[in-house]
Length: 467
Image (cartoon, rainbow, N blue to C red):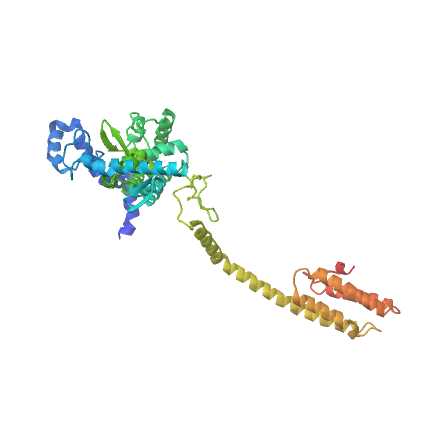
């Protein structure tokens, strides 16, 4: 019943402004609406103030916690296992100092200035070079699978919004940053907010901000003040865009616990070098813009599925593991290229093996038919030769057998082979019957006419081959 009634109910709802899409949008984003209401200082008075006081204790206040639990100069005397000064000296200062001493000694001993530092990697429990340890740290904070998942989801959202592929690469980059930032801070997709250039990342050029404003104005209907018009089209499109936006929220990542764990094991310096943490007024903070930048590093410059795009098609090379290509998602595992090639070959064989077998069967049937036809023609030639007067059928037996053998052993090029064999055969017969050249000429003409008229639609041997 529901399946049958759904199309009619949808049409009925569209007649009244698409209320089902509007209801779905408000239901999906109710926590964000309530948070906006409680956080709005203008709602502290009147009936709104009373309502705010009633619901505020029950509304969770969401926000990213960017303050780290590392010690500062003001908290250096607070107790830790010893205190924070002891902790940082043991896990950061002393190991780093010893690592640098060892590096300098190796340079002096070997004369090689390219020797890297040797450090202890707590994530693997082994001593290793600094570059390998830093790579392991990054994989702990933001695994490659998380980068692929986030970039793919953001690409899907951008391609849904920009289905015609009209946005420039710079605009897609700016919009992807805005979508991921809003999703990571529990904001909702608000078409009105995406008109405001001040809410895009700092440093966004006025031209890109204007391009995005015109893009969303072309998608939604607004009034003169920039407010969204109450229409079925607007509610449906907003709900569609909100769904892909919420998908981004599900893949956004907050690695604060992992970062704190790494800091407590002496990895403050490499995290600072990688830009994961920064220090502002003596307080270490997580650099979330850097994390978001890594998560969306696989976002493409255009919509590959739009007209003129370079979307995937059968036979296209997989460039997702090529860091120099715009389709790059992340490094492939060892042997990925070989596995990809083997899969391509397997798919090709699976697809075309039936066609290849059918072609072989058809060729075998054709060969059988040709041999049958030539055998009948050879017997007719043999019978006709018996009427040539002084020539006997046995005079032509060897030549006819040679033709039959050639037809049995080959298909391609049989005309040229038959021509050469026939000319050799005729030359031999001419030598044997110099006293009766007229019979030889008559026999040649009879053979030509016989083979030329054997299959009128497609003669096996053309008369011109005997000239």
